[in-house]
Image (cartoon, rainbow, N blue to C red):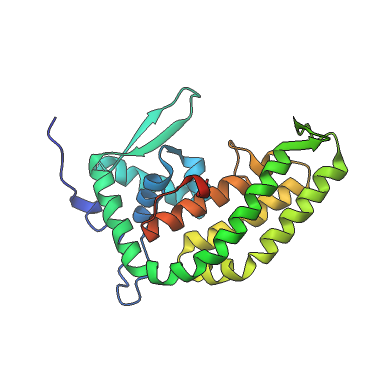
Length: 230
């Protein structure tokens, strides 16, 4: 099958009209970048990452699908998910390259603060998932409310301590502001007894959001994720 070259209405996808201050990718560009970083995503998952209205994403996704940058497919769980085509990956890689040129110099100083917080968060997630009882390691069944409350309190303190660099990150791109907002929502839901919102994989949990944010930062900086970054 002959591959289509990027063109048509999505030729400028990812490039804002306000080039002087480079406010970042436009709506189509944000979708392409989210799919590049996140792989197959449902419309709900894209909405969690990007914010905005469902109608806005549907319109942009429709245009990207019609122009061959994105394709829709069903997965075993029956949920429709979107992924990049060959042309879409090409366009998304261009967007990421522009993001790297614009942001890498400003992100690098923030990553030192992130690395310390990342290590602390990984330790908290491990404590949430597995408890130490004597010399044994057992799965946390969340039957000990006081134990869970201590971890949630520590998690809240960690996100509070991360606040200064999250504040510096937020103005750089709308998606960075969204990470901060999503973390606050997830922590609140976890505190209300929805345990999956600490480290669940099927919801927009603290750990899932943090993982996405870390991958975003590493990609923009041109760094591969290592075992230490997991």
